[in-house]
Length: 426
Image 1: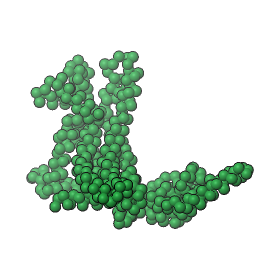
Image 2: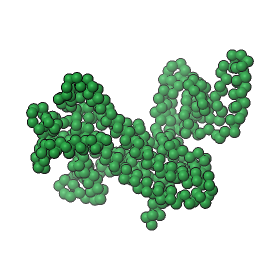
Image 3: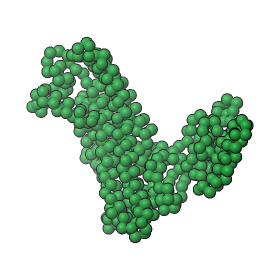
Image 4: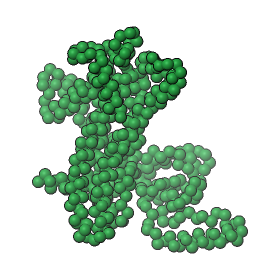
């Protein structure tokens, strides 16, 4: 029974890719994982999203233009589908009017006219080319000499990010109400939901925040919990049939990384900035080389956060879609029998990768959170520069207290801390 449900889930989750490969023969895994101005419920239907543009008119004035959908925007005449092959400044044509003409220099003599004749003959041949993509799947441009300055249109990744925020509110606001009443503080937690969420909260507090932030845990724990649960929710929404993974969009992961960057820099102590712009214990002739490297390290950390999350979430979906695509490629090349034979191992592989994706959803949320805690902890650390073990090993008073409580020497604690930092930043 469980296997049957798993097979059904895998088939439904990959239905859009299967439909595209079967109908159009132009299966594109990257296209199906990319963002778009529509919700994809293929093979049933698509739901177009509203479009909102900031447009600069031909006279230089700015104005907002709102439309119920991409199709409505093109139908208005103010917006058009960009002509295939049209470069900057070329005239855009609404869908169905063909491609932009290329004979703009036809008046430069007989040779130019011949070129235009060839172009017109080519246009006739292009009538046999399949229809252009629908407006919601095309790049739109303004008409009548106007220009789209900013596209404020919502996309499906944005909607699923907002959906993740809404789900978190539904989960945590009732739980916060219970804690205000004393349930979970004065008594044991009640219910499966409160116990499950408290387990995750306590784990992030005790295993992620405290080891890296020490006595500053309470100050930064709300941010770390928000990041963890938001990323986890968005990751899991991408595994729901007809869903989309907001965290596979570089714009979303970049915003999260920038948030960690801002928190880290504002948390930075005088000692933190001193180690960047005046590294202690370094010969003077080495500092001109080391200071730029340390300064660049401020920006490489959030860059790595954004790319790691984006790449891992995108890669898993691409693997699943390509495994489904193999079935239709084999069917098209070798026939139906070979396709059916390929479908069995391909579907089993999809189930395996799908299970890994669930694991990756938790792992990547954890990795982003623990690295954020590590970076913030490194920025808030206070180093004592007198001649003691804390100078030799870069340990704070909190680190020394933890070492003493655990029966460790500062040297051993230093080895553990450095090894952890190297492992997590690799």
